[in-house]
Image 1 (cartoon, rainbow, N blue to C red):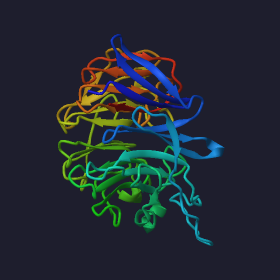
Image 2 (image 1 turned 180 degrees about the vertical axis):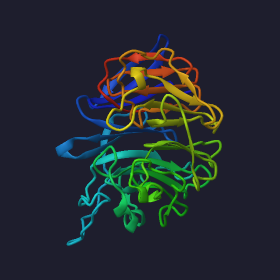
Image 3 (image 1 turned 60 degrees about the vertical axis):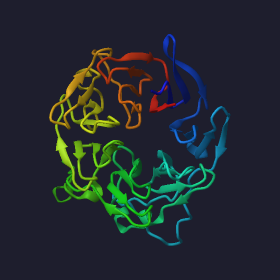
Length: 367
């Protein structure tokens, strides 16, 4: 069971540790800087942190176990070809520059040092040397369907979810807002759309069922049953039992809208969400912050609120800010108001860890 969390915030990266007296914020790094995402690579104990310095660009840092942070290469786009009229689904010109590292995942157990990074405006990158160098996965970027991708909550498309299949490291699935779900079975050489069955209720009628413009907010894969997937979508919750070849919608109360999703590492029927009011509102229903949990594959949901504020709660929980550890017992989430909660009992009850952090972008458990 992991006793450390890496909490990425608008003003730094914080290690939060569980000691004799409970969970405490232990130390901070990059204080004052915008840390958008962090990764703990359990294969070798290395930590990674992605920063967005705005005008000064995107940076990536690495910390070896017991060592200090050092800057490494960040994924970089190639030069845009002269005269290319490259536009997204909104018709806006695409900038061939890394505007955010929106997902960061370790490769398979059989490929030490391999990392995957998803970015805005939709490029996927791979490193085979712990982030020293990066290669852009051009077959995905060069597909004509990419020009249908469009921004959802953000102004531009982006890859926010990467699932490396535990059965084969050559099989990788990515979820894109708004561009559906894509899968490769040959390490990125070829790609196939895999969002069939999803639909976007609010779009033009002719585009509702188009997999190339779906808006998954977060996608997760169950390690113990890797054919099983969950997606928190802009228009609801979706599940797949056939390797993401098809998707079925499930309904939850008080809302099926949200950003994050966690699946139990051993039980694919158990998953957690943080619901809210969709679109422009984006706050908890009735100002009551709750976590919803299904234990039967989406047939029913428990509404879990013990220890969470039930009056005037306007916390937004971003897609990477809800996390679970490798036992399925411990959960945590942070919000845009700087609150951080942890549960030791699968979400039945919640403990407040901090109410004074900067706005939280992401939470990760680490060993």
